[in-house]
Length: 108
Image (cartoon, rainbow, N blue to C red; front, top):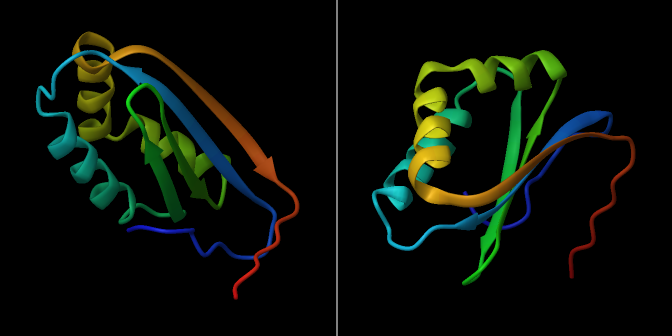
């Protein structure tokens, strides 16, 4: 998945994950790809957008409900990735859950 996510009319939820990585790959790219693939198959998943530069990564995933977000958070494979992230991949990270009440898109 790439580009801007095509989400339905609000309301829906956004999970904003911002991170600063540690040095080295350590399997991060493979796991990140696996998590996107797995998340996209979860009930309530609406889309994802992600960008990373040398210092900061931001991933926004979109969900239809707080219950769907909770189920994804507790998914066994995602829990493994969370543990590895805390142990190996991230210097710092933040997670924010927001309700989207309005959106607009513009295409040329």
